[in-house]
Image 1 (cartoon, rainbow, N blue to C red):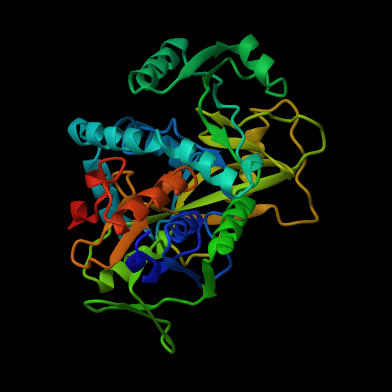
Image 2: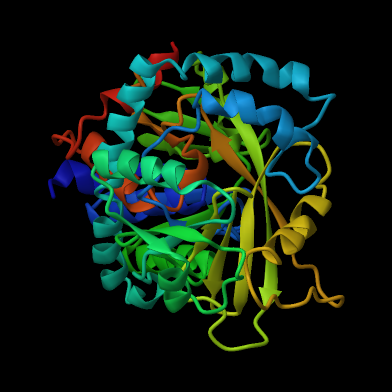
Amino acid sequence: MSEVNNKKHIAVVGAGIIGINCAVELQSRGYQVTLIDKGAIGEGCSKANAGHFATEQVFPLAEASILLQLPKMLINPLGPLTLSPKYFPKALPWFVKFMANMFQSKRNKNIDALKSINKHAIGYYKTLLEAAEAEYLLVEKGSLLVYEKTPLSIIKKQQQAYLKQGVKVKLLDQGQTLLLEPNLHKNIQYSLYFTEVAHTVNPLKLSQKLTEYGQSLGCKFKNFDVKTINHQSSQVELSDGDKCLTFDHIVIATGAWSETLLKQLNYKLPLEAERGYSLDLPEHTKNQLNRPVASAERRFIITPMADGLRLAGTVEFAGLKQKANMKRATMLHKNAQYILDKVPELSKNRDQGWLGFRPSLPDSLPVICSAPNHPNISLALGHQHLGLTLGAITGKLIGQIISNEKEIIDITPFCISRFN
């Protein structure tokens, strides 16, 4: 590394999985890095997510078929989606932009962009976790997408759509599915077996181990609530309303809380917080599951964790401030009874529900770029359902951007200029 690089002090604002990966990559390149967050490391959306490295998810969420399914999803008490009536007016502009991304020409471009970044996701994690002596936190056993009532013709069509995009997937009948996962319910008729995806048995531990590795390289962590950003020609000043911190460069990786900060810099960011709930079930019997199992019809996922099973996947549009509705978490237990043969009971003695805020943009693509009008500010945010998946590759790209290297993929689709 050059002497200039070694002297440059960089702040990464946001200690979720994206910010942590950016901090580790930059510190490994010889920069002096301070990771900043108002809370503890990995305690936001990175704490209790589904733990799925979902590289098969190359299709943006904006799909025309959702419009037909929407009414049924909203009225179903066990459904995967809910929308707060009083929040709807605020969310409406985002939904308009979301629907605009359903046009096939836009959708095809977004698919290509997701494919380009997803294909590097697990490879970069494996290298990083090996360096951090945490390889055990990445389990490569694939995942299943299971079907209860969907006609075989439609399942085959979906399989062909994945294969067309280069995603490796096998179609299994009931017998083949139960051989892989004996604890699945007899409701399951077919499954798609994604053979090259992975999961982690502890997302929070993953964040903590990567942070420890970054700290062993010299990265520092500071609790600081960044409320304002004052950009100057050669430095950036961060303020919490009382104290100020000054850096040569900053990376904004603040997830669902990014819109306010970017507005200060005169950037538009059509970001919506998808409130995602999860539910942890203690494992009373051995070998409940070997890999993540997602329900195609019920739109949720069950992942084997170190301490049991994690159920996740519901979406609630109600903003950042409304109180958590833990019925959204406990209903996952009811759904699981249609997917698993034996389901661990809910414990009455501990809080098993959790709420996290997914930072979602209407085109399902993250923002990974140098801020167009601020050369000493970089952006790494808006990763929607793929924050865990894209952590390591995002860190690598931010390192290349700041070091003025050629990026390993074309980052044009991920630039914030698409909204400005």
